Amino acid sequence: MASQPPAPAEYRIEDLAHASGATVRTIRAYQDRGLLPRPERRGRSNVYGETHLARLRQIADLLDRGYTLASIKELLEAWDAGRGLGGVLGLVVEVNGPWTDEEAARISRADLDATFGGDPDDDAVAEAVELGILERIPDNDTEFLVPSPQELAVAAELHAAGVPLDAISGHLRELRGQVEHIAARFLDFTTEHVFARYLGPHPPSDTDAAEAAELVRRLRPLAQQTVDAELARAMRLFATRHLQKHLGTPAAAPPDPDPALVTLPTHTVRAVQALVGQDKVAAFIAAAAEREVQSRTLDVLSGQHVSEREGQSTN
Image 1 (cartoon, helix red, strand yellow):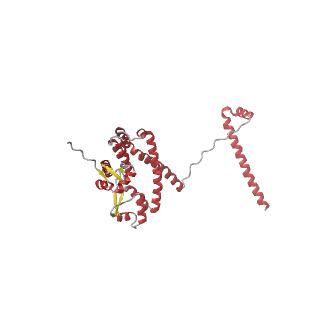
Image 2 (cartoon, one colour):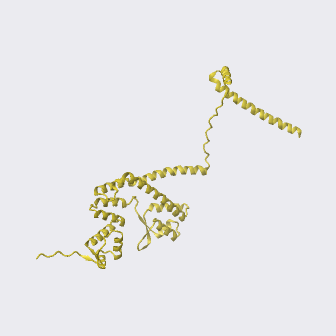
Image 3 (cartoon, helix red, strand yellow):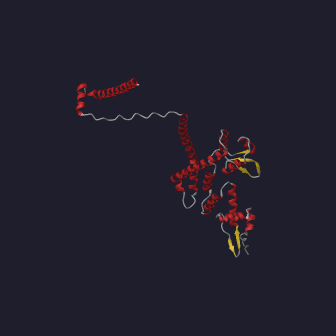
């Protein structure tokens, strides 16, 4: 008599947690987020199987590789749709990977205080942690992780130049909002003109995902390069205006207004033409007008002088 194949393993949620290394609370959270299929209901009990155990191990493996739960959900949906994960994983790696060549560093609390003047400021440190300039290290109260040493160095230079720490953090919050707007606009722009063909109701095929990943790799530095160039142009423009304003640099003199057109009687023009010739009419009339202006100016000045003398004689 042929032996019967072993029955598929079945687990209660506590047994599944023990077999997978996850907690009961985590398993339920995965179910709520759609990462884990619902168990089979038998009477009043929930029954899990090998599929659930394999899925939990997949999730744990992807978490160890640095994927977010949102990305893992997309990957598992692609898996369930029968598509290979190679291209999709490559695309997720490109998008979730670092968008800068800068490497994180560590700084001790003592060095941090010394960098910002030597006076400990717990409120400023808490603000920096909230902004992500510093990250606390588990089970380590003496050091911080610095995701962007360059950003921390800028803050230190501004503080050394006299800018208060609360003003620096306030400026960063404002700047971050503006930069996030720029990033969103660039993403919308590239999505519309480049990546729209890869987007749809289903995850991309292996080939499409690999092609999209290559495009992400090529286009990734373009946003920063554009912002760097435009920021340099704008800083030069506004810094020059600002300097001119505060140094009192005189503004350029406005151009002379266009000469007014004056209509002369035809007989006057003909008389002048007969006197000096057609090619000298304009010069003659201009000279005559200037002479008349000077004459009247002299008359006014001499009249004022006579009035002054008569006034003195009367006194």
